[in-house]
Amino acid sequence: MYGVFRNQRDVILSTVVTREIGHGIMGDAQSALRSSRFNARGLLKQQALEWIAKYRAAMTSNTVSSRASLGPEALPLWRIHQDVKFFAELFVSERLHIVAGGFRIFSVTESTAQRDNGLDGLSNTEKMRIYRAIYRYAIYGNLFYFDEGRPGTVKSDLLYAQEQSHSFLTLFPAWQVEELSCINDFIHDKILEKWQEVEDDFYAFLKDHPHFGDPGREDQYNSRWEDDFFSQSIKADYYEEWQRYFATLTLSELREIFTAKANALLTIVKRHANRFPHDFLTEALDEDPYHVTFITPEYEAHEQALESGIKVQFQEDAIDQPNEGWLWAHRYEPCNLYIESTRDFPTGEGLRRFGYVFWDSDRLHDSGILQKESAYPILHCKSPIVRDMLTCG
Image 1 (cartoon, rainbow, N blue to C red):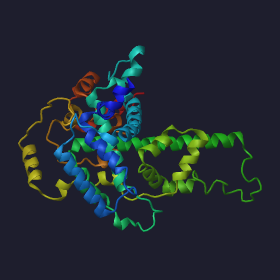
Image 2 (tube, rainbow, N blue to C red):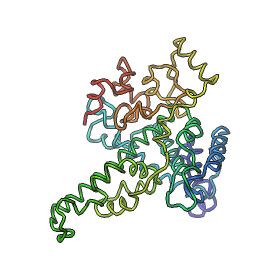
Image 3 (cartoon, rainbow, N blue to C red):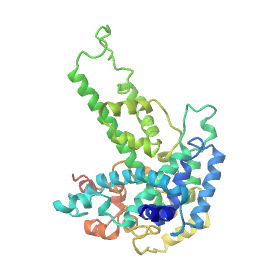
Image 4 (cartoon, rainbow, N blue to C red):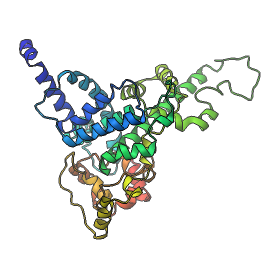
């Protein structure tokens, strides 16, 4: 058996890895791997634009073959996919169940609840949608990470939010950008959760050890923790910026944070604290879309389609097509030229909260969501009905 494997090693490994990741997103997986091999994470402006141009060409050519051997890339791809799969499993387990209290998104019998609330309960299309967004999140970090401690690198040498948006995010249709936004919001939410976990542990320790620290301190009005990570002044001044820096870390580093506990978690958090990012994904998503800033033929055609009342028909669940959740949220009107800014989707609220752009049509229909008459108020999370709908559990 080993002899058979040895003689066909590349073919077997390539087949296994491609099947696990999904043939339709292998291009993004390979690009994520190659971007992880930059000499230094975070490229200067001209280098970033050149790499993005190659990435665009690779996406356009669509040269990935189901029979192609991945060669020496097979095992590195497998390793990076383990990080991607970890985040996908975490996302599904924490987001898919949100509407379960009011809608039947998955079976709730004891024998199937655990299976259906994880990756094993998803279709291949749903899994690939989530994988694709996480791979692109990894690419984004590798491209636009900023290390203030790196000698000779200043922010003016890097792409700012508007340039990131117009060079990278406009490579994708709006519904794929929304997939990326779902993962971005999720990462930020998890960072805050882990920080809260560290703080809870820290104050539990102080409760059990009231004399820990410097008992000889004379100034009773200033806490001995004033300059520590959890002081009120530090939180007020730097909390958001530190959070945004954490979101720029690699998938492996974020995985380490999300799985660490107690003192190990505190050590890791302090290692990355007190560092500040450059513009990143959240800022880029808040930029005005390219087609709004510049009147183009595509923009004019889009406006004419809206004026004529054209409705977009849902075709099928496929990774190269918008899912029905996206079309329903936009009232089946054309919306494939624009990046939806994060201003319209406050973190942790609205449809992003349960990843509406990832789920198949059958799952959404079974949930009862698509039977709602108006999607527009739900899209902007203004309706009290929506808040009731999305706060179950």
